[in-house]
Amino acid sequence: MDLRDYVRAVRKRWWMVVGAIVMAIGVAITVTLLTPPRYAASVTFFVNTRGTEVTQAFQGGQFAQERVKSYVDVLTSNRLAVALDDEEPSALTAEDIQEQITAQVVPDTVLVEATITDTDRARALRLTQRLATAFPALISKLETPPGSKVPTVGVQIIAEPKLAPDQVSPQPVRNVGLAVALGLIIGVGTAALRESMDSTIRTPEALNDAASAPVLSAIPFDRKADKSPLITEGSAQSTRAEAMRQLRTNLQFVDVDRPIRSLVVSSSLPGEGKSTTVCNLGIAFAEAGQRVIIIDADLRRPRIAEYLGLEGAVGLTNVLAGQANLRDAAQQWGTSGLWVLPSGYIPPNPSELLGSGNMADLLAALSSGFDIILIDTPPLLPVTDAAVMATLADGCLLVARHAKTTRSQAAMAAAALSKVSAKLHGCVLNMVPAKSAGAYAYYSYTNEMDEAPRAAITPPRARETPVSRNEPLPASPFRSAAAPTAVRTEQRPTRASRRAEIDETPTTDLRIYRRTEDGHYEGTASVAEVRHQR
Image (cartoon, rainbow, N blue to C red; front, side, top):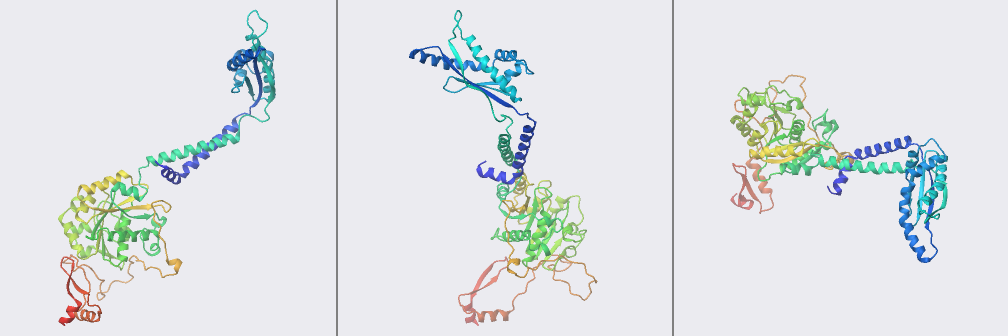
């Protein structure tokens, strides 16, 4: 992890850092309040040797510097503590006094500083005063050679015993400062560790790397989606609706040489939002004036009819089994060219039914009457239905949920499609938080510029009166009940209108094109040639 990864981890999991700091401060305050105050008194000794000449004085100074190091151990020894306890017995034992004495040598000098800390200010000062008397006497006894009355080393007091004005412990400011630093280190380390161990997909880049496919859209999380999952009426101008329109646009240009006519929408595991994505994507295509049909091929847990408020008892399985006609099973939703083929009854063999020849014939028949066919299928990892359908369609769209789908799950789903030679056109990162790095920003110009709101598709409503026999039916892409195959219906210009258009064309470089049977266009003649023939 580099510095940016650490910053991203802290921003994403800032509550871990704050929690660690707060916890550390709480522990520090608790320890500070429970620790009894301690006071310190200190005294400083000077160590010298006996010598009058310069050479002897220099050698004595070197000897004293070496000797003074051992005096630190003498100050903290049990012998001196027993001597202090014998002079004035108190509530403390010799072992307690020994633990309270600390000593240190001033660097590059022959000075020794001794400190006694105690919970009682007066007792700390009394013990230090006794130490100032007992330590020189003990050194004098230890440094006097046998048969001599003069010690080789002398110890003198150069700083009288003095009590510190403030308590030495606890120190609230220092404790809280250390707690903040320690909490910050622990919090950042925990956030970075959690980030490195988190295998869920949180950014489009991570989804792209895991599935080896482009991310066509990142759909932001909408709190209103639970009650209003469709991008209709009030949700038509939401950021989720704009993300669906972006997905629609990207799908139209994902393969310009072979435009997508049938698309399977699936996910790695359940609960990632594939069914709502299919419904809203179909609505977005219908908004653009295209004829769309949604096929609920999730024959294990169908949801399309429930989301769109349609009857799903008769549908795909009935058509494939020959129990119902395609024209009767398909239902029109709204008035903008969106049709729905529900799942029908749940069969015991969904995979075999979806991989049958009837399913392939059904897709071929629907391709001639609709601009786009959206197929909702079960997840890829638990069952093979989606992989089977992807081989019959033009490709697959993989939906992954933010912070739920893992990298391994997305990679396994893409591998499942690759094993059957199905094409993965792209991925969709669903339910992305608005403040996440993977969320796109969409802007609504309607409220700011006082434009007229976009006309949203409204769901079909129940009729108050029955349909009359003489009332004309809405335009249908199906020929008849006996022939369920669909054909594209479009108005062709008349010969008179074509001639009028040619006469009004001022440019002679234009050419007239006609559409061939395979869907391509070829130039037949220029405008000038047609005028010359006429």
